[in-house]
Image (tube, rainbow, N blue to C red):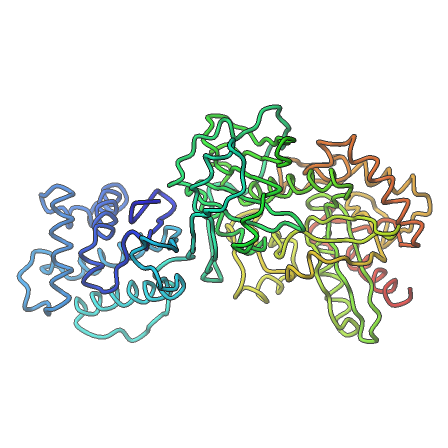
Length: 565
């Protein structure tokens, strides 16, 4: 990104390396500020006609922009009674303009990017310090001008995040280990660090994922026409794999939110060949979510076509996890769509609990119910994964590993108090809408990427009327239930009603069933040979989200298993 500012209807992106303002004088004289004022005046014509007529005063929009900005600049050094200016004849309207301009700025998702390396206008400065200073500058400028027009100090001050919502530190990776066919990605800036101003509330134009990820026979990189100045790369460690997630700047909300979900790879790790490449917001003129295995370079490549619909965070998350699952199956590891926790009781007893099931089956709810019920006897609950993980065998023993350091959870799935416990670190997506989500930190990468012993493995059944837990002694029966992947869909995707998905996992296993089936056989044989509890947990959430009696009984029996086994 070369220009100082990029702006669309939803988002404002500031390039501190191209232009960084350090004072109120510089801010009000900057081209960025003038551009924002002009766009705001244009918008007022429809939304606030009275205020628009006051600002225009018979002039063109550009002329009015210059005149009202000139008035604001004069207020930096003079009092109102020392200034002869049309806009000060009606101070109430001027205050209204100042307040609405400030709100217009804040309504946008606001991000900054700082390039490290030579040629930067701010080289040597910390991107966090730069962004924090800019936040104070915007807030102080607004207050100073407002108080000048008011003629008095405010009585209440609110320390809003007036600058940006998040800041990025990026660099051009000169040591990118990609073959010639991927040269178009070589100059895309790679993210080194992210600073989130949490709790971060973002609103997207889409809040549900539809469609399927399908395999194609041609590498999506061949249809990639992206301008490196309009793209960024989030280098993620997904489980044990290295993923380069490239996203168009119009989907900065998704790219930035990845920081709460995946571990950012170090600069040294980014010099290695990636296992996965994701092109998110690919301007290929299609409406597709596809993947391809580049066997020559041994890279799994995913592509999500540019559209308003993919602004929903589930697209970038699930495509990345699909690529991970496909790569891990090729290595002999079985992907699990579910949740895995290590529960440690007050007496020191520790059990690894793995629940499997598709979206809405009740995995997160079961864990929340267990936490509430076992409050007095549980010392600690360690999250290994909250959505996607793997089972692999070492010397015949099954172990679980995770993929994400965070959790992407429906707010409705959580106990009422849970979303607020970690709100100071969380990203909230469309919190006022149906299918509202929170992305919250869940576990350190060292925990996620380590081996964890499995003591309990259960399919989350939200469609049967049975109560509690059921241990299944027959491996063929338990495998059949898991492979059928049945659930009562609650509308978190495009599905509603009773549905089936191969192995409850449409993110790799369903697409590659011929590879997944032998892995299922091998893993389930090991589970039974190692005396792991294998069965079902009945959540009842397919009947009612409000009636918690079924899930509470299941949690009670799960706690008894942990205590007695």
